[in-house]
Image 1 (tube, rainbow, N blue to C red):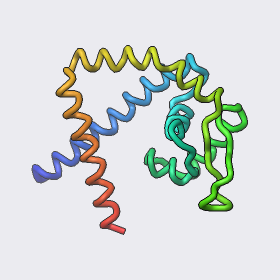
Image 2: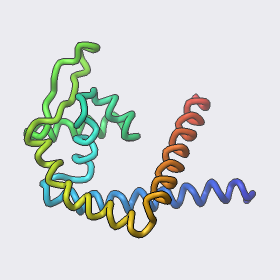
Image 3: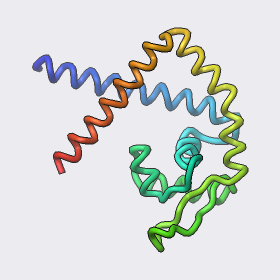
Length: 149
């Protein structure tokens, strides 16, 4: 294996591990609010503005079918609602309801504790550099995937 391949493999394996770690933390944070990590993820995507299922899937890097299934569950539970989409007649917008927003807000205090613990371990500047590097890596992978198609 070349040094470049080794770097790529290590980055991928580390990212898979990070994904699992973040999901485990998200499940712990979301459960007391009556949510799952996946429900929180979808609600979080529409806190600022309603989005179509395809837009949520793109933003989250998950399949449209997964988002559709979760959105339907959230609507059934009264945590989200479907609204007409002026840009597309058939692709309704997913919007958070007051109950959904309240559930997400219940996560806030424990979320703050975890964030503060990360900052105390890494330091604000190092954590910011880490987030910047991860964001850049994600953008480059998106570009490479776009170049391949």
